[in-house]
Amino acid sequence: MKKENILSLKGLSKHFGGIKVIEDVTLEVTVGERVGLIGPNGAGKSTLFHMIAGDLEPSGGTIGYFNEMINRLPNYKRTENGIVRTFQKNNLMSGLTVKENLMLVLQRINKKHTQWWKKANQKNYPLLFEELEALLQEWNLQEYSHTKVQDLSYGVQRQIEIILAIAGKPKLLLLDEPTAGMSQVETDQIITLINRLPLEVTIMMIEHDIEVLFGNMDRVIVLNAGTLIADGSPEAVRENPEVREIYMGKEELANA
Ligand SMILES: Nc1ncnc2c1ncn2[C@@H]1O[C@H](COP(=O)(O)OP(=O)(O)OP(=O)(O)O)[C@@H](O)[C@H]1O
Image (cartoon, rainbow, N blue to C red):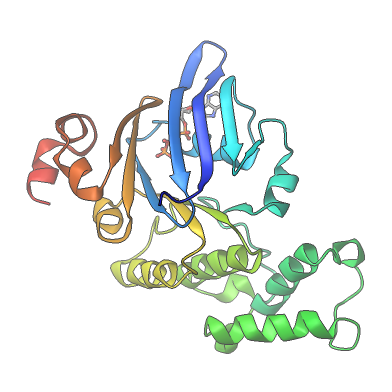
């Protein structure tokens, strides 16, 4: 039986003035799929994420989320409904500790954010603290819990960012280049983390490291100059002549 669609893009476009950054993109993603998104610089990958997350309004086409058309749903409502994203640059509160960053997310999703000024403590929010401790334990963060984010290595910061996104209980997680600028060891740690995420969470991940995607995603989508040029299993995409020609360079793929 075919799984339910979580995301359905139909004829999606984004134009800035006369520049067509995304042009007529149609695709469906089913619940729990792990989808990699690749394409040369400027192909429109981040723009596609901006539109799915509600940070940019499409110029044309529709965005379906489960059975709802969400083109006009504001970004914060999409987050509340389970569309959570990470950015190319860290989106953490660098002057706060790991624990404090996590607590901010938990307060927000439990609708206690109107009282952000009221420092959460075990007495006023016992359940939030239980949830916090469970997260710290599950993701082995105890050693960092009292460390300010700015004092952590870049690799650990990006891991924390993904864990914060998970704390928001996403249904559709959009990861924008989570391994950018990382060493091989740090990349491996991020991938291990992503592979540990709950199977029911659907993941779309923009990534420049082709090998990372081929090893870890169910499916790979290729954008070039705003147009979808390939969509299939990692193996099929690897063999696609247009992808070889346009994106990866024949030599690089021949050696892959
Ligand atoms: N607000 C904007 N106004 C005009 N052009 C824009 C705007 N945002 C993005 N663009 C252009 O749209 C194109 C696609 O950008 P986008 O960031 O989506 O590409 P990308 O595939 O994510 O690239 P990269 O891999 O370099 O991050 C680029 O040419 C960019 O300059």
